[in-house]
Amino acid sequence: MKRLIVLIAACIFLDVACFGRTPDIVAGEAKSSACASCHGAAGVSENPKIPNLAGQRPAYTVSALKAYRKGSRKNPEMNRIAAGLSDADIDNLAAYYAGLLPMASKGNPTLSVKGKVSYVFCQECHGPTGAGSGENPRLAGQHADYQVAQMKAYKNGSRKNPIMSGIAAALREEDMRALAEYLAGLK
Image 1 (cartoon, one colour):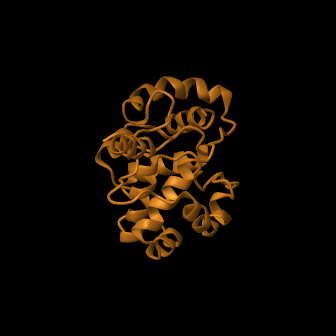
Image 2 (image 1 turned 90 degrees about the vertical axis):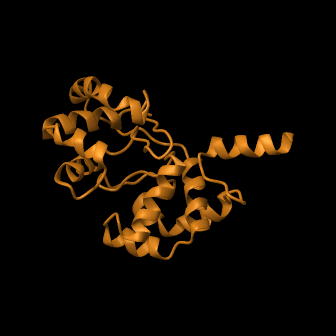
């Protein structure tokens, strides 16, 4: 019984669905070599338009990769890569990236003050520190340019999520930039 409780606790801690197996972090690291050229060797992208994966919520990574694989989330490169991933590969990658240390970007201090005020509306889903929860992604330390692009995609409908689309619809571009700069500076 104790072993079952420990296993359940480990699954909850990793925030990954464990139906019959535990993700293999070593296999995830090996599979991540295909991701490194864009997302960085340690899951921190050098390109501000490409998201950081280090420290990302496992359930979010699983959900995103499966959406790319299915084609319901559009990005030609990611759709191609995800098409070759098994469910085990996806779980392993999610567990690997979740275990890496996230990095804070350098947010614009002036805009960050305004963004901090706006973040109040985001905390319920993304947490008080931007670390995310469940399938709600970690936003802390994410590149500001990437975050602005995602908010615009929700606003114009090219990314679909009823909650995010509604929130983004109410944001002006300067609000998006301030919010993104604040989140970029969080760790």
